[in-house]
Image (spheres, rainbow, N blue to C red):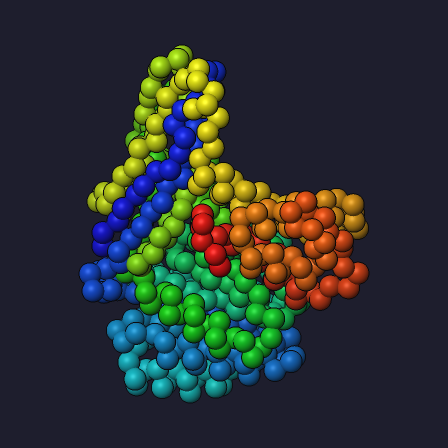
Length: 421
């Protein structure tokens, strides 16, 4: 795997300024010849609670799970978990992992056909079983899919305690089918497990969704990549956020690494590029003073793959210090866009139409200005956008629950500077 890291910033600060911002673009070439450097394990968790009988969801889930298994590369370890009031391993025999081959994929399909919908929803138990199975394969690229159609039924706080125990041990992509599950619940799991959350509005769309997730997972070639940020004496990291392909705050995931450095988990990587916003507080300097505000390293264990430098130069030339860096401005706007949508949805749910209109108007303005057409189209299903330039919108009286949930789950998806959808 080869990586590059490039910092984009306006390094010039006004006198008295102490906040340094930079966008660091990390690009990976993927493994040599697209090959994984180690092993990989895939676990598919399918909600089999009683509510999955509705709208043909369980039948669609069976088809999707079988299609997903077909996408697993030969030699990859895998398992299928049936999610009910407990976690039941559907394939292979409990406590074991299968190795993907034409024979085991065929056997898995037979097991999946036996999947029936009855029982409750216990996401903490499902994730805990997945973690126990993954633990058999240290060093592997670990990926899980969690599909549900409802609320978690476990006692209050249990899911949180499980997530505290297993956080970041594997990537978990969460999908909700229909409109009776909670976005906040799946977002919490996806955030702690460095995965994604999305709605699959119609059961018939499950197969394509599962195939896309497994195909993406099979393209990963490195298991555990980290962003290490070093800052000098009297400087500190204010935040580290992934800002492309979606907004994800990594600040709270920091693990100290020496006296003035910390590591932030980036999960598994293949051939791809992601952008990170790094904000550092430094002591204010005088005119002409310069300093290295941060050193950013791309790490895999003790191996450094790439580094980028974030600098600060103080000037009394306002033309220099007020120059807007295009990348920083763009992603600050994308983060604000996600926040505006979340605030708008919360206000709408609370019956505060005035605040909802203001927030959605700002979101429409930001989406339009940044060329985020996908988000603009999702917004248009919740509000009537009269003028995207000024952010003039009107709330729609009737909004399908699926459209509101799609806007919620996809509000954090961003577009790269100067790139269309």
